[in-house]
Length: 115
Length: 115
Image (tube, rainbow over all chains, first blue to last red; front, top):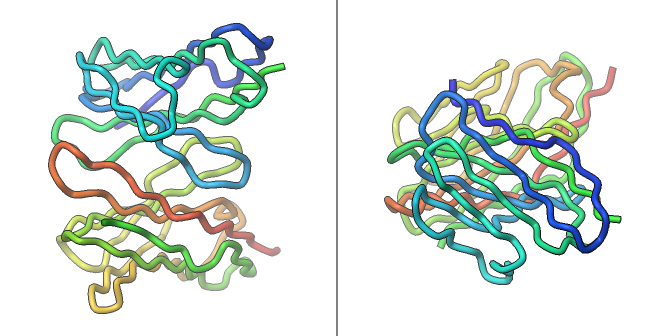
């Protein structure tokens, strides 16, 4: 149980284009989803927290207009990197927790490369 | 405020010997603590968690951790390392206030297992 999927697993795009990453909870209802960014050989950095049906809460220093987060249902959240640039290249990981749950279950990650 | 310190960035052990990955935490509240493992280019997998029940927590793949309040520690151990244990390990403290549940990550410990 508690499986989280992400799609795509890897994406390469040109500078200036937008990229959408999906995060799904497969066997539980995720009232809260989290989006992280991980640079090589570093820890995870929380970008934003999203609760189903409400606006995401972004961490300090994360541009909400650049990283659009939608959590429209209890099993799906999306992260859209708008007008991507090479410095946005990174490993993006989502996690999800269920109602009242403290434990986060992580997706397998999406590697984004912006050329 | 919560924080977590992983004392070793790299640990090398021989296959079949014990593993010790150290973690110290700081928390204004009664903490919830987690250990996650990350294999290369993968998401994070939950190894075990402490949420104020038994202080000795058993996890998957033979790992266990002991919560020691007096030492503010939550070290991860395994009696006998296997080659497949080579990965990055993260100690995490959760902000326990309902509605928050953000994770604070340690910087990670890379475990190398020598044949």
